Image 1 (cartoon, helix red, strand yellow):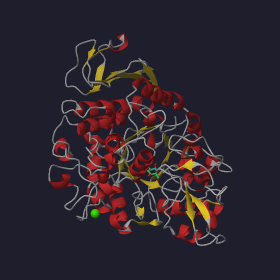
Image 2 (cartoon, rainbow, N blue to C red):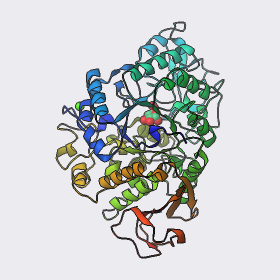
Image 3 (cartoon, rainbow, N blue to C red):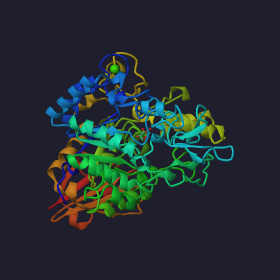
Image 4 (tube, rainbow, N blue to C red):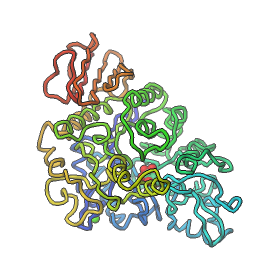
Length: 554
Ligand code: GLC
Ligand code: CA
């Protein structure tokens, strides 16, 4: 395999709004990030993915961009950005920017002009349609609830928005739009940034004719119908040829609806499109079969293993995986697949980290994951800020699928706001995030879970992540080794091997608080323990609650 820097990287994701406030307005900002860069270096990550910091009216917290070449007022100025980039580079940290170009904000000057008349030059920057039979142009439902179509009285037509109505979809079939986007990307790359995380990039090429689909329980066809459209790979290859290939970058496509076969193009090792993709199959392993994300769900470990293992096996040597449990759109993994119980929280956080970080691919650590941060105990819908949670809750409530009490339960388990509560830095007021009032409440467990306490304690989750990251730098088998799943049907154990030449690893993870019996394969008996989440090994043939052990042979 060709040696690319990003194959050995560990990426740390920052959600700027919730990372560190520097001026007491309760909103994280660029100066706050700059002040915390040493923390990320201490953890050992070498690359930072910054969620959007561009000018935005914040309908979707920065994923609705009104100026791609300016900074969000609350986050600071371009000078603050340049200072952050310079310091990051001086510390040896690379900066990967979020690129949100499936849609812009409706307040972007392109859209303001586009909607002004039917025949202005910006009209075709977006996707406008006439109504059909006195109704909507098609039956697609938005990711945030309701139709994807918004009627605009000024010109008596509808525009398409796969997300909120303040996020109109750009028309990638218009070559002028592609020129604009590629020029803008190049402008950032000239500033010296190190790559892009491409927001819902699998949705940019819409299917011919925007055909109706089978309606789901919310009454609409899934917006994912528009994933991996007819010109998807053509447009990414054009982007690659005209922009990306001129630089040495990490590019990761957030690919809603991506299949393994598609990923072999998106993330092909020939470098013709992107470095890697974020796939969603493993995030959907605990979804309800019809209601999806916002419904009671149960852990199904055999299914989770099947999905992750298939991606490990089938991309090996052909394309490159990304590895993640958490990001700004997902509930916290400790609450989802681990345990919030005091005696198990840290053990389970370390077990989950082990399971992910020993796989082939580039691991992503979302802010606070390295501390084992957990979901927030929401008690009221009014506390929720997230447009996706609120939109879907209202849609389900209006169709009689859930009442408010069930809604709150759902928020505790599933809302994106669980990931967005402020970073827990220390045991001081507001967890050291702000001297003011935070825009989302700080999780009340911050006196127990915070960075200062964990940095000072050698057996903390933080130091465990630090060790996992350091091991990846030391052992090629972790980066490149071939993967094989053992015990596929076991309901609680996730066991796999990695092999590269004479080196091999056995990774054993107990996804439960039950003691388990497990006989280590003969060839690993007496092998070196590379890392483990208990201080002393378990008696032979047993595993303790949430135990994780990695054995190494060479
Ligand atoms: C992506 C982002 C998410 C955002 C959506 C629309 O899924 O990760 O936060 O709401 O795209 O931009
Ligand atoms: Ca601030």
